[in-house]
Image (cartoon, rainbow, N blue to C red; front, side, top):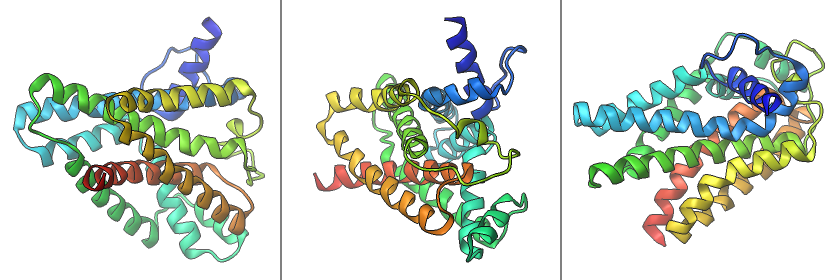
Length: 265
């Protein structure tokens, strides 16, 4: 039990800025096993976003302001870990035409035009999509519960989509300096099963409330297929930045898919 707690806190420390016990380190062995808890971290990030949204909505009575503050809370929680990866991918694949050039650009800490434009568009779409998904006519108890489950589902499922790439795709960076290197070497059935359970559990609950939620898996499977195909074509596999980009894209796609499902089914 203690070992599993240490692995969980290793995941929490690696993927968020939430304080962890002082004995927790970036041990490569634990980081590799921490893959199983990546979607579970989404539960925490999603819950924080939902709590901030509902709390600020009660305080300011403004959906727009509450969504922005919720997004800020999520960014502060993760340290913009995945958003940084998305920006790097936009810069790398937008400005590079060879594997070496793409990897070099993504390694650069400075953000370029493609990354800046990509982030602006990403947050704009995310903001308006969340605004469409959130129904402010619910009573107080229901709005909190629905927000909580929706935010948790989105963050858990988007992280499962991203982390599942490492189970079937090769890591391409050769340097040991990359933050993803420790989690990119080996994954046993325990990591795969754990990620699937924690990633699908919130969605499974929502499917019991409405069968429409099952269709959210279709666009995510398509995203995963084309993301892997695209990354393999240009760089031969994936990097940590690629996983961050897929997580962010999956998050937006889930919100857009919810809107489409409720409009047309």
